[in-house]
Image (cartoon, rainbow, N blue to C red):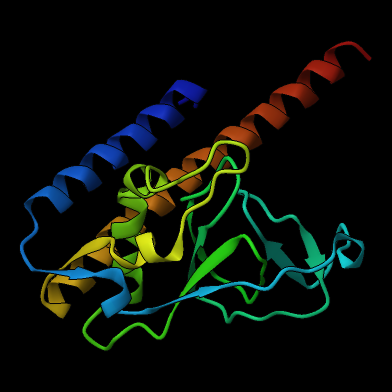
Length: 197
């Protein structure tokens, strides 16, 4: 069974469709994001202090780390949302401690009635809507006050746990499919090189 980029895209679009359908049918309280957590803006580090590798990555306005630093200001298992730049509104779940830069919001002190992973999956499913909160054209950004008003559907905690486990498994499946594709492409390149030795 061969894996191709189309199958990866199909897997991602299937997950997106399932997630969208799931959150459309869910029932619960509709609450502003600021009522269930603290939205904390990160602290900027001068670029000269960043390195190309290190213990803690630095998240800023992009979808990838902007470098590495010898310290962190946010604990592991924290949701981050890009605040500025072309990727503002990008939602990420950080499984390791990291440094949140000046163009990054982190979701902290989540209330007891909201499951961390549920909130991540909900916000990730609404990423396009969050990105529409951006203002400005030169260096677009999302204002904290607008993010604070963003509405979240909060069902019963047991329902949240069921949803987050299910969506986390789907997300992991997509990651595994991608890892298999990369491994197979690498194997293909190796075999092709062997043919011409």
